[in-house]
Length: 221
Image 1 (cartoon, rainbow, N blue to C red):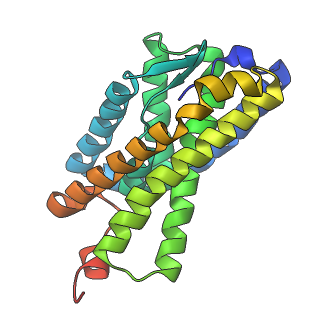
Image 2: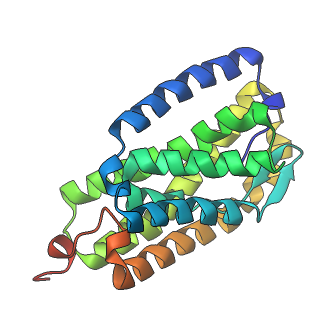
């Protein structure tokens, strides 16, 4: 999903810019650049950015200036970790904005809500699952991919709704009729997409999924 910057006061945009700049500095500092020195992993990262860009062109406009599309940021986080996922999503969002699918004033608030937030929530759920649940293939796929895909999508949608209401961009009645009513049709496809993608990659290309290790989730199970 993406916002138009016209929905928010200028002071909010400056605050978002400061927060996004700080988070990007952390992402650049903490990123596993050594992984991208491997040509195969670099090609995977760049290919993921392009795949996100193509996926995000398939969208529907909920309200003028507020578009919805499938995200897949849960899968990207499981593949690359927090830092590289934030960078990949930011590059893909830059691409969609560059081709005119969004406005530049909305780039930063969109990046915070629809990239940084889902990536952070996915990373948190992964950490909790590792700490408190058995390390098993089906736990990894159904909890960290399928369940996380749906739950993260729902939480992000609720956050977007709250921000739009707080900013006075839309009334609750407007969002209820055109957005909240269709939430179940949004988070279930997101859950299926991420569960399907991760299960296939873990089965055929486990080296693509940085958070998955055979010795942890498969050996001896």
